[in-house]
Length: 417
Image 1 (cartoon, rainbow, N blue to C red):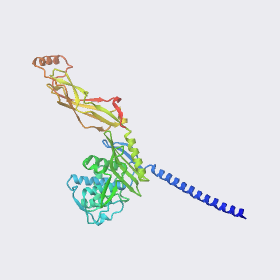
Image 2: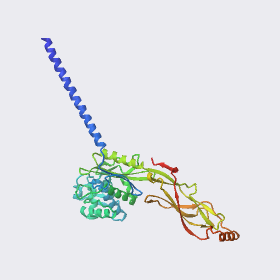
Image 3: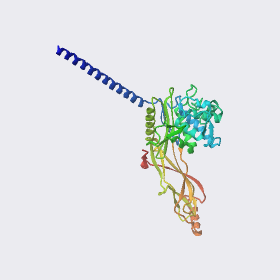
Image 4: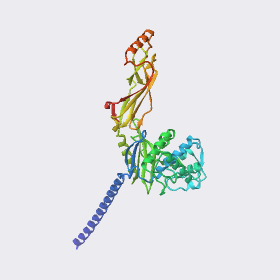
């Protein structure tokens, strides 16, 4: 009898142990499943993306870059462009305080939670839009500059037309969903390029990592700020219709690129994908040494000087970061009015240097003479004129505009990374 009870008790204990094990195994399985699901979200491929060269506007890489999409809060880049433009034109001032309306306070989505009737400085409204992605701040600005959002959206569309954007239309300042509110990766890159180029004094606000309003501190949703690619802007976006998107820009070894992804499935996914395509974009460039201040760029003919030629130098080391595909076709152009009449003093500016590749032309760099050249005396000049008379290959005294082209070699190239 005692043995019978012992068997029953042992069976019950064994059953309990098995149940506990099964529950634990199921829990581990669910955790693994969740982790796998999370990983799948992180590595999700964006629906649209683009990498654009800031200097040239050339597209480095793209995926459905001209496909219409929901820009979500990336819309705020255009809103901020109009704010910065108003600051430059004196229509707004950074320390100017604007009233928060009930309409602004009651906006949906991301906000800074400004109270209706309160006054907020333009600077803080800018930081709200950038860091908090504040829809309430956008409406405060829209009502100030245009009276209401509909009128402000008209200003946004007018600016888009000025930029030559063919596939963009705004209905609001915030990016809240509307079937008539759309853009493309290419168009958003163009707007970003304009805002960086046109307002360098205000662009720095995009690098702010936190902002506090009404005692509430929120972090910038752009988690890539200040990373190894020197990312310093611009804006995130998320709606159910558009998915997760982000516009970023970084500068490496003098080259700035703009990268955008949209339609990702999570915040981490958009950060990973945007960082990845920006890094790959930089990998498509090389650094080429154009000129060294310690070595002559070229020589120029001298008129009535005690030397026939003189070396020309730049006053700075010049390098160019160019796409690898143009490594064989970079052209350096030298513009000099020659022959240069003597006497020539040390440090005399005598011409300019530019470089070009594809459709891009650089700014002008000045060329100087480092070695002075004395003028011929009367006897030397008479002898020079006699030789010129009999030698048809000698340049007749007088000034003429010359343009020389120098093709670079690949010896000076080095990868931007």
